[in-house]
Length: 316
Image (cartoon, rainbow, N blue to C red):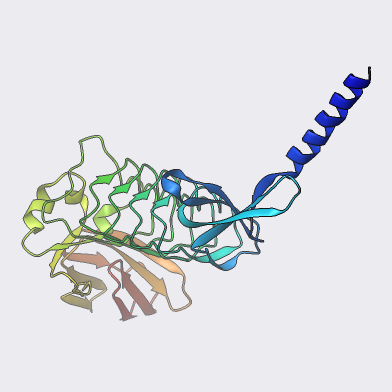
């Protein structure tokens, strides 16, 4: 009986010691886990949002059986995995240069995220990484990225411009699905990245209204390539050259008819001076004429999808 009592006491003492031993990540706002390759992944965020800077290191504190600190391990932050999912208070984020992977749903439904830097070691942007980040207006993908997975930027309706470097070898299906505000895409491949006949990386985007900027000497290749050929205007440019949109060559109004000659297909809209939309029509590349005699007289504002605006003195 006495032996059983001693053994029970020893077992209880061992359990208490085991409960005191352990390890914890030391950060007030971020949660981490060990990631493949010896780094740490950001897996959670509990801060107030706004402009967030992700730390480049994560600290794991190891404790012994009596609760004493036995080791402190510093990990490089190498991945983000779902950490900011539905963080609607997030407005901008700075990702450390040590990160190589932006995991699935890392920034999904961050509805107020307007700015994000993607550092130069990132190789993979996983499925739904930026899904429905509707306030994001532009993204520059660094030349370290090789893979943009399915639906990675799906629903980024505020995205107006996008740069894809030649390092990218794979773009998943629906990668930019319903990026409905997209007006220009810049690519760097001398040979267009191939897509199959039933592949829709830009589904839900009005490509006929978009500019595609390509390397000098490659326009004909892109005009013949699946998906890329659907862009309304393809412009060749040298590496590092700023994107230049071509202004309308001629806009004239006479006798109630508006004549517009532009090098691309686009939407033409007519507004009253109070901002009321009176007419919205689509034109093909080249010359087009529109009868405005049924519209109210006075000052009207004509605007094209490529960015031009003109004032018209319309008389009935």
